Length: 151
Image 1: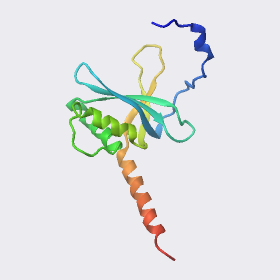
Image 2 (image 1 turned 90 degrees about the horizontal axis):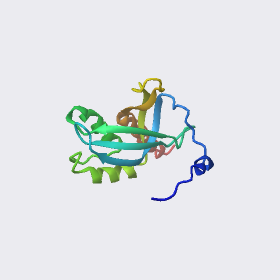
Image 3 (image 1 turned 120 degrees about the vertical axis):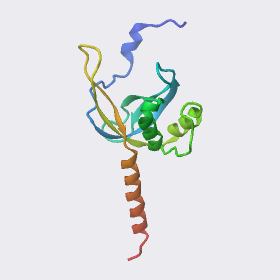
């Protein structure tokens, strides 16, 4: 194991640990892994805010593959535009590659009660907003069509 010098930790770049305000954000998947959970495997996802004043800030989310959480992992794969049928566990590798290549998608961030007494509440992904994303894509494609009409 390498020797660690604790004084090196104060030399790094300062991190912005101010809370991220609730709202809708465009994010990209920075990392995703499949982990074993108590009831079912889950996706551990690290997201980076891709636009706006908070660009580059990190948000973590957990998406269970259990049948009870099907709504959430279904929304996640819709958000990354992964539309081919797949097993959420056996097909993880292909889906993860698609998630990492995805240009960005909308999420709604909101507060989550911190279970540790005395600790601040934290921000988490409340919903993957793939319907908002689809609507915006439709609006953009409608604008493209209108641009081609000569006047």
